[in-house]
Length: 461
Image (tube, rainbow, N blue to C red; front, side, top):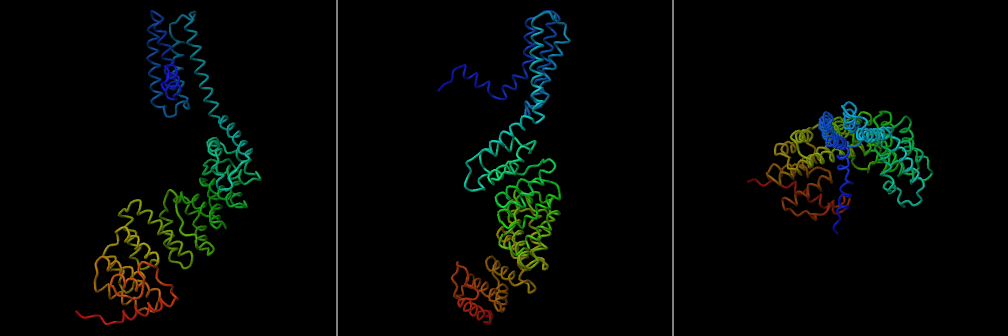
């Protein structure tokens, strides 16, 4: 349906940029009209004033167009036009001179006054209180408490709380967990707090009976920079609920470079806690572990128990993310150094060697180093498999026989898989399926067969 001319003009005038440009050009337009209606010195003065205010309008539009109405500079064309009108050789008994001064003064002062009121934050504060009241009066809530973070009132409340969190703080004392979750979601990763406000949120993060409320409180404190608050929040790495523990990682590890010295003690305790050994690796949302964190994790990976396992898992995921983002020479060199170092954790070296192989960065010289007798047997087996896959040799088969003869059923089963897959020796395994359980009868039979194969004399060619 085609719009009428009046509708087209109305739609055009509603565009924010059009209104802004029209506002800036109004002083020049009024002075240009004065040029048309006057003669003599006043005519020339109006012309010069029109050009000057037009230049001011262009300058303001060019340098302040991103901020538009928020910049006090938008009233400069009006101030310039008032100065032209007040200082020029005009007859102030004429209607037009008073009209121009009245229009320019009224509009300029009004805009400046509105900007001054907006700068105080009073309108946002009023809107935030209204939205907080609406949230408190809400009666219908999602059945899932976690979904309360996404109710429609949260986003506008977050925008209204940009300057001041005060209007939402009373909601944190509401008896309904839904209201508290929504209010905390509106303050998620908030940077600016008044004295005492983050302490109130921290108390909720530590003592709220509902895990969903604790999660929301943890994320609300995700951007605080005070060390004592960060250290206190890091204690929630050992919260009983796994979702809270994940939220703590999301809230604290995004700024790992700054915060790692503050949280490393709590992180060490959480990774070593046997209660959370199945939580898997820690991850950094939207960032990366700092060099100090990586060095600590490499050291912790050499420890036994959950600390070593989870540190290894965390490093493997960290390096996998780094390789996926782009394998730099520095990163590849670092990984190769860790894999080749005899002082490193065997499990970590094995994980990183597999990563290098997956990304085509496991070179032949590293593989040859890994099959040496002083290398742990799991790494030797991994290197043998790489050799048989890419550059088969009698040396690889000899190393495979050495490992297979060791009195370790787990190593024997791993060696049996390699023997059957690459040397086509039937040892009773179903390739493509997991190996049999270590204490099963089939595992015992496969172990006996691979040891018999390993003890066979090597044919002389």
